[in-house]
Each structure stands twice: as C-alpha cells, then as structure tokens.
Image (cartoon, rainbow, N blue to C red; front, side, top):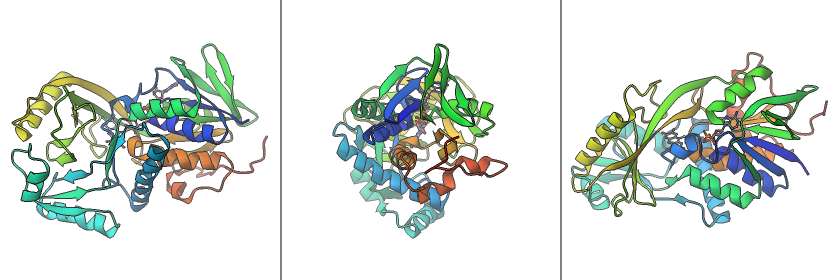
Length: 367
Ligand SMILES: Cc1cc2nc3c(=O)[nH]c(=O)nc-3n(C[C@H](O)[C@H](O)[C@H](O)COP(=O)(O)OP(=O)(O)OC[C@H]3O[C@@H](n4cnc5c(N)ncnc54)[C@H](O)[C@@H]3O)c2cc1C
C-alpha cells in the first residue's frame, strides 16, 4: 500500500486525502494547527468561474464546479450550496464587457433588469439598473468541507505537528521532518498554503508567492435575506447556512494588489458593516467576527498543481474553495501513475523554474 503524507489540513490537503484514500493510499495528514487553521478557515467560499485570469484558468474553474457536484454526490453532508451569483459591481459598458467575455466562453448567464433584481433580493434598498446572474455558481464553507472530506477519507490527522522540512534520499523525497522525528513516505504532498515556499526552498525549488492579506467579516445570524451571492460595488456578500452575512473587507478580492490591510481589523469591520447597512437598511446588522488571513496566491496568480520533484507533489492555490475538488481529483490520478492531466499543464511549478524542467509523473525510474 502506497504510504502518502500530506502537509496541510486545509480544503486542498483534505480533498487530496479523500481522493488518494479512495485509491487505496494509506494517507497521513500533518498540520501545524488543525483543520482549517489557514486560509480555509477564513474564506468567503465562493465557487465560480466568472472570475478568471486566462482561458485555461476559466476551463479549470469550470471543471472545479463540475467536480464539486461529483463530490457532493459522494458526500451527502458536504456543506456546498448552489445559490448562483448576482453581479452588479459595475454597470454599463464594463458590465457589458464582462457579459461578452463570459458569453464567448459559453458561461451560463442571464442579464437581469432592476425589477428582476428587486424581486430576487427585496432587502436591497437601491437595486442597480442591471445585473448579471450566474446561476451555476455556488458557495462552500471550506473548513467544514475539509472536516467532512477527512472524516469520509479514513486518513489519519496529526494535528499540532509542524513539518520542519522535507527529507530527501538519493534525489527522492522520502518523508518529512518533524520536531519529534521523521515520518517516512512513498510520496509527500505539500498543500501547506502560504507555508509551502519555506518547505520547498531547501530543495532549491522556488515557489514565488504574492502577499495578499484579506479580512473576512461575519455578522451575527439573521433570518434568510440574501438568496444569491452578491457582487456589489461595496464588495462580495453572501449569507451562509447559519444565517451569517459574510463579506471580505480591506483587500477584497484575489485581483486586489494590496500587500497589507492598513488599519485595525475592527475599524475595517466597522466600515464594512456601515456599507452593508447602507445596502440593506431594513436588516438589523451587527458584526460578530472579523478574521485576518493570508491568501495563498502563487506569483502569477494561478494555481500550482502537480509534481515538484521525485516523490514530491504540490497543490498551492488561491480560489481553493472553487478548485479543491478538481485539483484533488486530477493530482490523485497523476499520483496513481495515470496519464498527465492536460488541464493541469498550464499550472505546473516548472513555469517558475529557471531551467523549466518537468518531472516524471508515471513509470518513473526509482533512484
Ligand atoms: C479572505 C479570503 C477570501 C477568500 N475567498 C475565496 C473565494 O471566495 N473563493 C475561493 O475559491 N477561494 C477563496 N479564498 C481562497 C481559499 O480560501 C484558499 O485558496 C484555500 O482555502 C486554500 O486552501 P489550502 O488548503 O491550500 O490552504 P490553507 O487553508 O491555508 O491550509 C494550509 C494548512 O497548512 C498548514 N501548514 C502550513 N505550513 C505547515 C507546516 N510547515 N507544517 C504543518 N502544517 C503546515 C497550515 O496550518 C494550514 O492549516 C479566500 C481566501 C481568503 C483568505
């Protein structure tokens, strides 16, 4: 039985654990904190392909949506829902350009009038003239899905155990070093989010990352008021299954380039709440929590998924809520000796390497 160690119990590590365990691997997941200790525990959790950086990125995100449906069919308790999104961040020409781009790519969408928006979200005080509806989009609590995946996988979790380094023998990664000793493995997966570059650097592997902090605001629970995810000029907003309204504040989106949150988290939360209250004056809003997290964004904004060195695999990305299911399915297939997955070709670590070297993924000679 293939012994696999996964570093990181976020949504990515746990989704990979689930897929590998189904394929018969004996999986151990190590996390310095616990499930959802990183970005997965402080995410907006929007599953979408309307945001994308390239056509290949769009295709991967589309597959991400499909793979989430497959996962939900296997996990009846998966905390995934499909409310669809109403986008009115912009109006006029800018909105039309977004519509044209997504229509060209074949994305399901519909243009709504003010009256239709009003009927869909009556709590919205001043509905815009037009919006785009993306009916295929969804939402997930990434930490809750990670817990669900790990429980269903049968993988073992070592919680509170930091990996200090990767162990290499004869050019192959053979385990991980912890403060208490070495955990041996046939394969190691680094799914450590922002902690990944530090693990790779001693092996001479460079994974450049952007510094992208984000604040996530959560209100106290309310009765159902927002039937859709909303992308407004004030930011992205959704109501979760517990009735809380969630909204990224400060640096709001992956597209934002701010490297610090500049100001107290509580002050940002107060401002964001005032913005929310202006949008929904009839709702009795109060914020309960604001959480600071660093988004794991590789240097060009795109995911890194696949082999990194003999015995070593890598899955580091933003939009992990959207991409977890597809990334896990595809990397597990490759790790099991399957064909290289063409959809992952643009997302290899080798794009950052000066040599541009690719690594063998199947029938590789063992050193
Ligand atoms: C504010 C915010 C909003 C977001 N909104 C969205 C969204 O709407 N849609 C979307 O798709 N994505 C969104 N994201 C991104 C998404 O949440 C992340 O891409 C995803 O959670 C990454 O999951 P992960 O498992 O790779 O990393 P993480 O959840 O960060 O997990 C990595 C884990 O590795 C552990 N670790 C790190 N180093 C070590 C080590 N040396 N030893 C042991 N353990 C280690 C950490 O403790 C952590 O638990 C958002 C992120 C943020 C912060």
